[in-house]
Length: 485
Image (cartoon, rainbow, N blue to C red; front, top):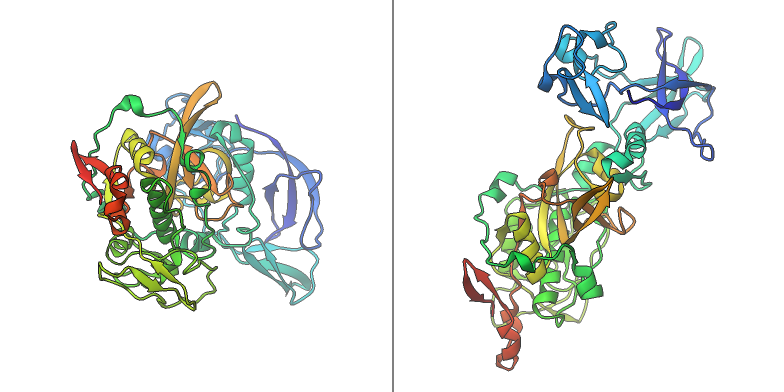
């Protein structure tokens, strides 16, 4: 049975006079509390938390007598049980599965009530506890701090759980100050931003590339091959812009690789965000990948220097670049500048499937765009090889677009673990310098389902003197060599 000793802060709770205990890990050097309150410190053993949503008993069934093997489910590196032996009273005991009471005993938990605690506070005072606002009110002659009950983006109990089980999970978690104080709904709305239906992406017929498996390496990283030409992760801020940033950074990488480094200027996500505003594209409130790729194919992008990315200030800026459609004139004026920039376009978007197909695509043509399913613990990722866990199963999820730049493998607990190297769009302060690694070959978080790309249209920039350059710009489709230029 998984147990550990923690410090438990006891607060007076409701007007009925019972006490409720919030468990937190107390670190000797960091016992800071944001408001003064009377605390009673005790030690306790933790059982399995009863708020880990998921189908445990619903999958293995319920048993009327003790059955250690046939009536249990894995959870947090141990087992929880769905038999009457674990049932003690209306609340169950420490080793019952989280859904034992609701599924086996048909006792639904009460909806969460506002958190009511009774520290010393000044009447009318308002303080924030993580993402919840608390107001000091009077009750029975005493001052009471009453808080609302939002689900926070940084969940201290979940964070603590992952830290303790990091060896089993294979990755570590961190409390990011940029996320502290934000609600989970804010994270899903403003830190992701991909609206594309996964089913619509799957309708795209995948490219059937022809390649030799022996040419695929056990590890490959575009950053090591092309150096600083592979653009660093951008921070989308509190703007649902992953759909735009990942698309544009993939295209930037592909111009670098397909021109052998001759075109290394970063392209402008702001151009796509501001000007691709039709067909249900919503800017900072999210966008569709297919529409984004089609728009770039038609109109093209200017450079980042011409139209720079700026943190979102709550207003959606209008398009400041003329949509050129002439094949003869690809130069446009930069916003609020006398400079001009050439528009860079792409070919048809296509889907890449299979683990080896994705590897071949990255090695030959550059990074690819992937759409993944995101749950709460991903926001707290710090390092290691991430994998979707069931600790937040049953909670809300969202879709996020990212850029895969390579792959590798490492040893974990005596096993060889393969992973993708992925660029996020939350800035270099997050994860592994803005990147994260995720299990490879298992379709983790559905990341291998929705992989797309397009060829950089280098034909716009090649002339007859560039014959040798153009000869290198080709790819194979169903065994047939296709020239790009």
